[in-house]
Length: 251
Image (cartoon, rainbow, N blue to C red; front, side, top):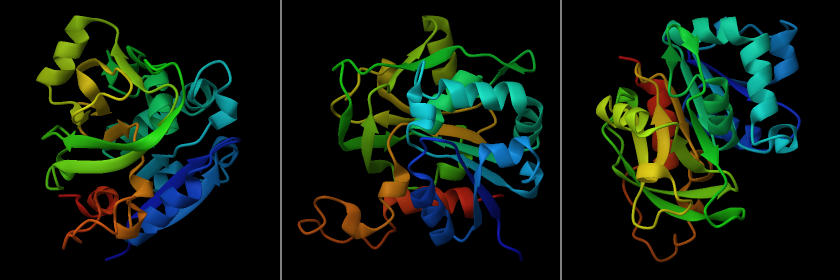
């Protein structure tokens, strides 16, 4: 059986592309890193891949708003191709800036009347500053079924200034909860003030997922800041569990 092919998309300002590619390769994916211009000028064919990852960083310097310029490029220059990719059941993962991009394209939390419409955002943290530290999360049983067999307690690092999840109204927030589209929730302290402590979200089909903390930064036991004081688990670190689930769970 041939390896699952994954594409990691970068632009000016992206800085987590190589870490994300490394995590995908550890998970068994045949992985390519490509600049968005290669997709726009058809030097890369999106349909050749089963997984698209939009990694963290500061695409285009987060000018205007975090992820907004890259979101506009994806929506207005590659929107039809990306919509078809999603509707065909391929997986799209947005991490940190990638999550910001996906909500600003409207591909998360999903389509309205067949079109991507932005109805949620990731606003400035309640602290009013950039925060870079480890957080605890709970992995919910969600519509993102390929993640549902991973551990429920997650430790991952966050690194963002605009990570406060907000829905346009209470009705939409209730709908997201009711349709099991919340994938991750902060456990204990809510570090940025997100509504319902939401740290990660998926679309109704479960094949598009975004999260603010960084799974690619916890694929090795030794990356955890408390690794010398913790008993080593027989399971993979949760970040590697995330990528293995994305690459291997296609049933």
